[in-house]
Length: 236
Image 1 (cartoon, rainbow, N blue to C red):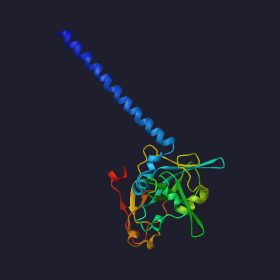
Image 2: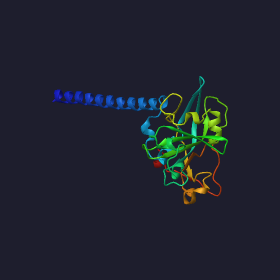
Image 3: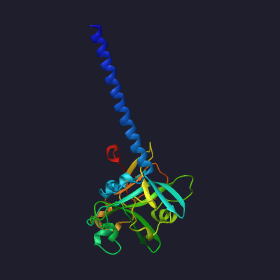
Image 4: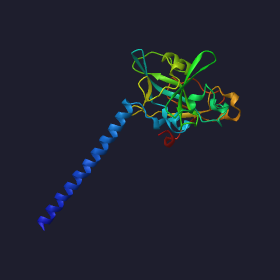
């Protein structure tokens, strides 16, 4: 009887040890995955989804720009999604042109265009090849004690020295790329309609702008529109 009980206890301890080891391994794998996201560029498959999903999940990520030996980092706080040719605010609504051909690349490339004769605009191509969607990077917070005003898409590209020379650039390289959110960073994401697309008929009211509601660095709110919070499930 005593031998049986002792054997049972020994077996139980062995089972507990196996369980602890499995939990420890799982914990290490999660930590490793987090470290990879924080130090390696986000992979192509992050971008190869619909523009609305990517626009939401880019909030809180870190944009890294290497320019002439200097590395600048900033935290993304505002984006807008342009969801394809049926979206009248999307450049692809007018078909494929030399200007928009970059949008037809697979997700994970930079789409940079010039507007108003003044501003370069950084967009992230999303979705599959020949499915032209993109996310406009509207605003960010400078990191690493860098003093810069990034509270608008034109200000952001100017401060980061992003021009049409980066149009078509692979965003998994070393010149311009995104890192995952830092550990513990849970932005409070709100949505609203996009800014400056009143020409887009009924698409002007599409709620495809995402931003961190606690950030002081967003550009502005659309006039006459009350933003809404994204549910915890949608913003995860």
